[in-house]
Amino acid sequence: MSILQKLVLASGSPRRIELLQQAGIEPDRVLPADVDETPQRAEHPRSLAKRLSKDKAEKALASLKSEEDYAPAFILAADTVVAVGRRILPKAETIDDAINCLGLLSGRSHRVYSGVCLITPGGKLRQRLVETRVRFKRLPREEIDAYVASGEWRGKAGGYAVQGLAGSFVVKLVGSYTNVVGLPLYESVALLSGEGFKAHQNWHASRS
Ligand SMILES: Cc1cn([C@H]2C[C@H](O)[C@@H](COP(=O)(O)OP(=O)(O)OP(=O)(O)O)O2)c(=O)[nH]c1=O
Image (cartoon, rainbow, N blue to C red; front, side, top):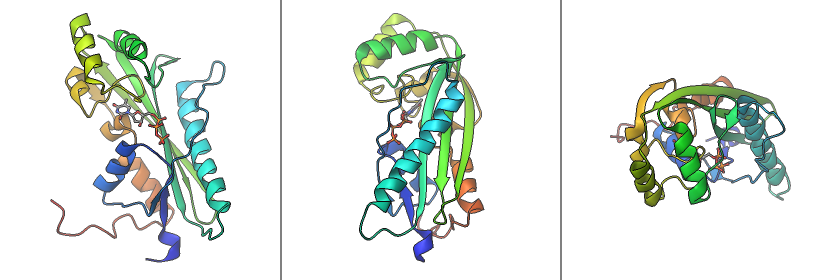
């Protein structure tokens, strides 16, 4: 593998690593980039997801550059935001956050936005913004309580994880499913391939 093919995933999200691996891409390095995720006043959820994915990629680049043995690499970062209209739901950290989010999502449609940002070894910055519309069934209070007890909502945008128990809340999903989980695969691979990263080079017959 040439040095220009190295890929750094600027994320601490186990979902993002798994999604990349699902696409047959193994990052050479995982480098979580901690950024302030507070929305700006009246910021549209779409703009927030885009801005934060860029902040994460740039933060990872700065941290790589501060290393003695720095070598240019592809840096990929993403940020996922759940919104009802223009209202941005928090990344649920407390039981109250989760209950409030699920109450808002119950019986309604919402949108999930992921910003994906790629910095190339040559320093070019490329971004995509992907939107998925999701409709949840009505969630009776007992079901919200049972879901909250599962703990699956912790650290998840909008207080749910579609890849787990909450998959059964989904009446309709329009757009990219992997976008909801945290990394839209079609768009991320297209972004990488478009900049010369050989995304398919590790596809082998042993995968089942
Ligand atoms: C809506 C939804 C979100 N999520 C997760 C994906 C993200 O990890 C998280 C949204 O928070 P993010 O801020 O996008 O990501 P993160 O802080 O977990 O990771 P990092 O910034 O280091 O990359 O919510 C799911 O796993 N399933 C879902 O259905």
